[in-house]
Amino acid sequence: MNKIYNAYDRYGASSQKQDVFNAIKNLSHGISTTTFCNLFPSPFDKQLIALHADGAGTKSALAYIYYKETGDLSVWENLAIDAIVMNTDDILCIGSTGPFYLTNIIGRNRNLINQDVISAIIQGFEKFTNKMSEYNIDIMLTGGETADIGDLTKTLTLDAVAASFISENHYIDNKNIQSGDVIIGLESTAQAHWEDMPNSGIGSNGLTLARHTLLNNIYKNLYPESFDNNTENDLIYCGNYLLTDESPIAGLDMGKFILSPTKTYLPIMKEIFQYYCNDIHGIIHCTGGGQIKVKRFINNLRIIKNNLFSVPALFEMIKTSANIDWMQMYEIFNMGHRLELYVPADLASEIIAISGKYNVKAKQIGYVENNDTTEIVIDSKHGVFVYN
Image (cartoon, rainbow, N blue to C red):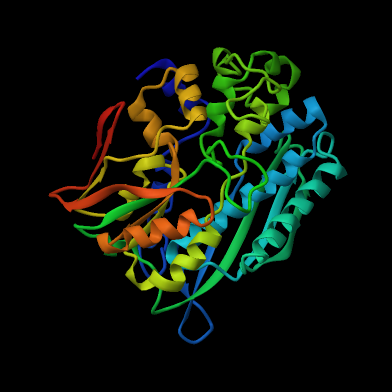
């Protein structure tokens, strides 16, 4: 492995989070260990509850720099989208598209993060929930906590907790993924009907690596509060780009290109569930762990991905700037699709057509076969990579 990839751990980030999984291995995972989100019995008859916590991660550090450089508060509104979608779109993998009950948790350094920023974040939560209501998606904002913790947080962290209920007879469990299934991927890029601008596809994962390997070293001295002081000097903002440089997407500078809000698939999946929920064998949200995330939920299957989307421009740029090999890129980033459905082959065309109605391309990106061990095969134009 090259120096930059080895440094990913030294940035304090991880694509696999194996230490976290080891720490929680003895905790209850609810009614099944193979549902994408943990499900627990609820107080209501024949209903299960999904509780989930996630957030925008280190994307907030980039939003901070961009705001300080430009004064543009809209990046904070978009950060609220990241915090919501990282929860709701994990929960949709068990078959629920709401109602969702969502609480936000903001930790800030009050000396650097003012009232205008907090107001913009709250406005972002409200704007997104209002937009989703146009698609009959109910996200109820139940309040939150804003903690002034400058001793702990250098700038700002934004997280959320979401809850949703689902029938005990109609949830999706990845244990049903089986030989013969095809894999339908939904693109992470382009511009869905509910999005205000084209999307680079980055989501909310790998931002530490993206930020430091793409952005110019000028930001190191200007914003020392935006990174961990324990990070090795030559790894901090070691790229070539300024935030205001042009990006490959017309109308987006590099800052907003990297800060593209995490795309939600809720409206698409609501329609798909209306017709095919009981026929879907598994759903994977390709966030932390990228294209090999499914490995956590299966046994004795070979997942073959041999028809992936073209690698989006942002990931090409990160690969070049960081000098990471392709095998590692596929296990860090979503690389072009962030949601994948495991379904019988005869459902593929119907699901692809529904997604297309919302201006989100979908296609069959692979298939499943039996195997003596668990194995993920990425068969791409950049090479064949096997993860086992």
